[in-house]
View 1 (tube, one colour):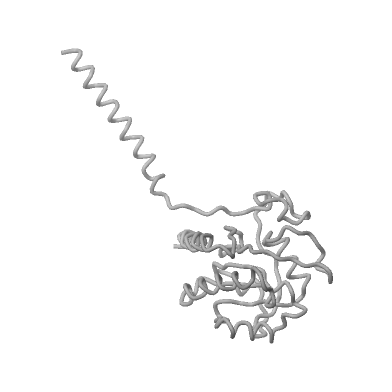
View 2: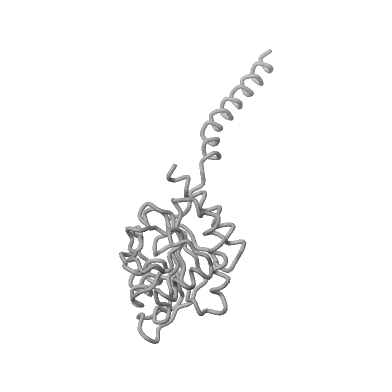
Length: 222
């Protein structure tokens, strides 16, 4: 009798431990995934401007003023409270930019009726990509200016955004006349203008991952 009683007690104890363990583990398994919030120290140092490299503080996009394809002045206020995807391109690029534009257009069309999502494309060749040129480009690709902003303006401002805000490019420079950047990176930004993901804008697989991450990011605001 004592042997059977001892075995029964061990089974009860095992069951109790298993039950308590599940109380803690199950909620963790059910917990919604959350995207990383990138600090300068989290990013490949080659992508981070030396002035902010290795910073551990929370990082946000710097203030800016640029012009859209409609000639409207665009600043951080226009993306306040929005999830958005940013990239850098130029209209006469013949290699990676057409692919990037095509991928962004697919995202633009997928979220065309979603007021929470925006897209920002910054020209890296503002000397040639005037408001009029960007407007013609937008018309060519049937871009809704309420959904997807093509931005031009001061080259130094754009290049500082690429290097010091979005950490989008490998090269260093001063935004001067001979400075030029080129990158396939798309950056997913949250409603506080923080970087939440990097993606290859020429990759269909990465675009699927980007869409998945947009949905994950939405959960933070539900």
